Image (cartoon, rainbow, N blue to C red; front, side):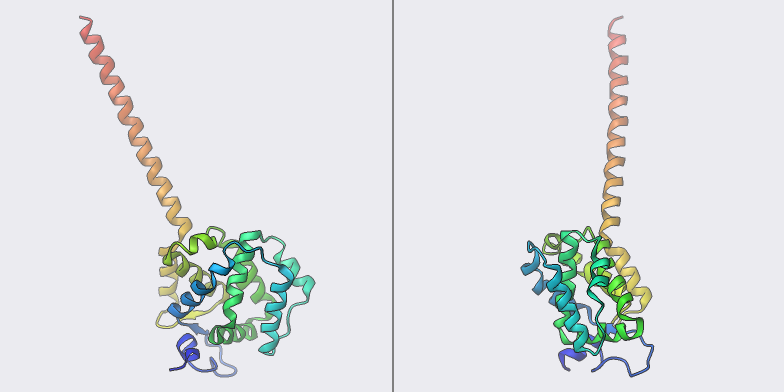
Length: 211
């Protein structure tokens, strides 16, 4: 089986005119992201070069790139870390099967909606997934891959949409942080109650000692 088939499932993607959602294979996608991450971790991304790289990808697949002003407008909310996430996912378009899947989706959805939802909005909304964090945990890299696929509208081989959504929900780093914070606050509240009980007991014993 070719690398294209492993990543995308069938050579060339869905049949022409099909509304079937393109599917990626998770492990090779995570491997590609992991391999390309270190070069971008502390890099200052040049917006014009990234725009040109994405436009070249679109032309290679017979798509009409966005006008530069439109691309620049979509990227206005991005901070430095969001630009790095955008550069990371753009870089894996060079993996043949990933590019094939993304191009197939662009034909179904339109280039501008894809760039807006699958690239710039994704890069902004995944704000907790810094490239440094991605290098520390394979689970966080899997979360990034799943978030990108979801933003693009792509599926994964061997998973239903419901299964993919459930897996992403279990990986949700923001939710994990919220749960940890709630647990911390609950523990602090319990400690506060215990402290008050001890203080009350000590005061009671002190009063008894006076007699």
